[in-house]
Image (tube, rainbow, N blue to C red):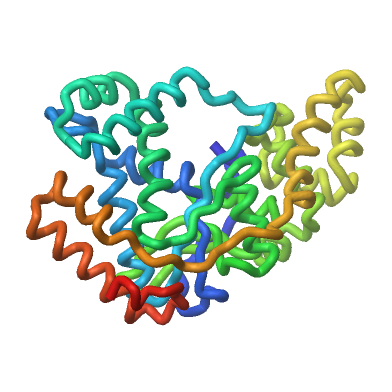
Length: 327
């Protein structure tokens, strides 16, 4: 969902992707991929839903063509103030994916039928598959100890990636200096927003921006009735911080507890560490990738796609680890 009506304050602009520095970009995988998958329409037919494969490969190819290294960040346990995932559903999806990985049959009736019954099940299946796809294509994958968006923002704040690709601007609140919500890499452009612009336009510091998110309503709290982004900016400029605004608005002490808990979530990112996070590129597992694509696209197209990917890797300018072993 993100912060309610946040678009009133965010200035999204199209910019040349060559301005993204460093030339590594972090995808908030659940957020971005779910939106892309939702535009693909309903699942029908006997084949297992593998749209995520083509979206993933499209992202990788598009990034490499312009010299960008994509990094896919995956969710860990959700914040306690958000609805948790269904463990039984996750376990079932992982079992279905394990069966699919073993058989390689994209027309497996039992798996196809099970996935067609549940959008959530399809997503968890896709996540398991996407993790393997990162390995097989050689692109870095990061498992977050918390939400993917929070870890991606930490990578940006620590200078390890140049932008966070997500559907909304919440990563700015977690400390990312730059957020991208749309890629048009065929024209070398990205639609982006920056933390500096947001702070300049609102006159608020980082702590106050996080206060504003809670006042407006966010993933962790429904917000204060009657407060939108612009009103919230005025209130914070006048009173200074979340606690002072709540007091001025007559919110009782016992009611303020939930606001404080939501506000604390945004500060958790300050305690995340990127020590040990490895964003180096590995050698693609071409045979495994080609086997997967062959079952979906046919032998000739699968071979062509893998060869194209390898050429892009070699010509991308991205530093690679032992890529010549495959070539």
